[in-house]
Image 1 (cartoon, rainbow, N blue to C red):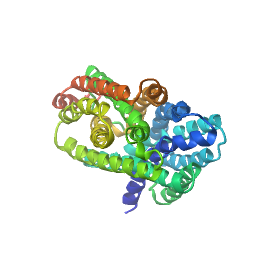
Image 2 (image 1 turned 45 degrees about the horizontal axis):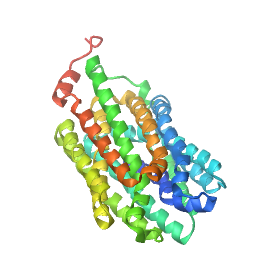
Image 3 (image 1 turned 90 degrees about the horizontal axis):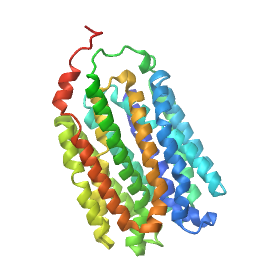
Length: 398
């Protein structure tokens, strides 16, 4: 029972992680008005530090998770996220805001390389576990949209950070009481003596990292830009933040279900085949969205977010299947450090790119990124050959 509650808190932590990072994107227009910034596009670059720290921090977070302990790092996550959210609510100018967002990004970097491996350690169905966890994270995005919209309309943008910050601290106190103590740090336990051939391992890691980069670019650009995209293509939403939040919440709630479906598929079929099927559909839908207006655009948004969210579980599934638990946080951290650091530039470029070229061109660029994802996925070795190679004992074990 304690582990079930701990698993629930770990999934809730994923929701908090993404909720916190997306509050700013939903509240950016209100914050820009409060701080006297002319346009929301001019304020977007100030959140780059949050996503850059989210990426860079993943490697030391993963290393500490393996060598110090995942339970301890999750406590740092809960309390750090709560404290940084309260600090953001106290800021009075754009540079204070940028620094506080960067601090939040550093704490947010803990979850993916620590929380997900902690969840996977005792599971027999990693695909389903990853799918449920991914769905929880993306429901956090939906919660960010709807809660921020309502809190801005009926309170202010600062309250939109205070409420989830208090929730994170409360979850940390419960996690401290419930989560079982670890029997030593994972990295200090015995390593399984099964290894992939060096060439195969390097190829898998390269494909996994490059795919994580393109997937993160699509994820960051869409989740941070969808609110303003809807306001641009559905002008009735400009003065109705609560309605905008509800519409975005519907998009993200529907899209999050795709991760659960993908999780079940990758437990039953080769990961590469499932990946190719989903990623091949992304480019055409972004093309459709680029030339859509009104409710047609909204329908296209639902579809491309289903596909974007549906592609997220793949890299975690590859790690879960072919990386030993004792080094899983470090491998995940290295992959995330590269992918999130590069994709943070998508957040930096969002405002200036839309201001200069408009959302139509931006969506066409996302379609091109989706095509790159497809080409990268083709390079992933066949799973049967990977599995066969992984079953060959290393020379040291022999």
